[in-house]
Image (cartoon, rainbow, N blue to C red):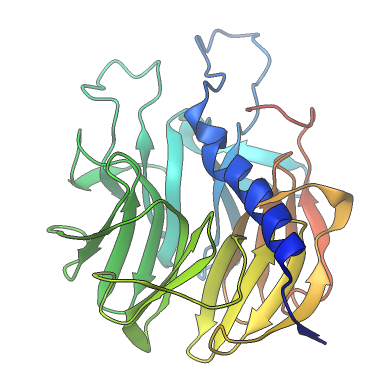
Length: 298
């Protein structure tokens, strides 16, 4: 089924995504102590998902840490409460992230982590660049290119050396970025007004006609885009000009995060911080994590 977006759908989707894009502008509960016996506050609102290719473990990043998802629940890595906003798995046991330090971290000197890297699946982190300056809410590796969306300036940052140095590019109020190694100069961005497309590495963007605001977008293959509409519908496209419905996230809750480990292996999280997995390109979904108390972390 080819989806033809209509104006009412555009308005509804834009409203839903506007709520998602502004969700983190309000105050979020943060842990004030980690005393023995205190109840675990959970993940907090989730902002990133990924699959470690070395062992297939699933990871979720939220306001209250990075977590390995297991059948028995979400396990906080290294008991670290850093507020992890941008998050992506770029190789075996190798993660990139951004956000804010834990409020209980005595070594923190700035509210912004910049770009940080872990090569041991989140056990330890080192600062790569932009510490104290950038707060990337989306990080996207595309072959030799790394793109980051800095929430402090609403500007796309681009790096050709793994994030050591950056070039500041377009300024736009985007929510999510997508790119692929086979076409590293092409960047797709979700905004409240609709989907945008760049062919010059994020320097300039053009609107994609007829596509309303999307909650999240991924490019798992050179000829494939997969996105989540604001109502949880999973849609796919080759070049963004026409979209086909694939499936729907369960639960009837607004989607918040989408990750494509491959064209068929997808992860998604909703605004209640439940995580779902699909192994058939978004046609069917299985819940792999549900928080003990829906809504914790907002």
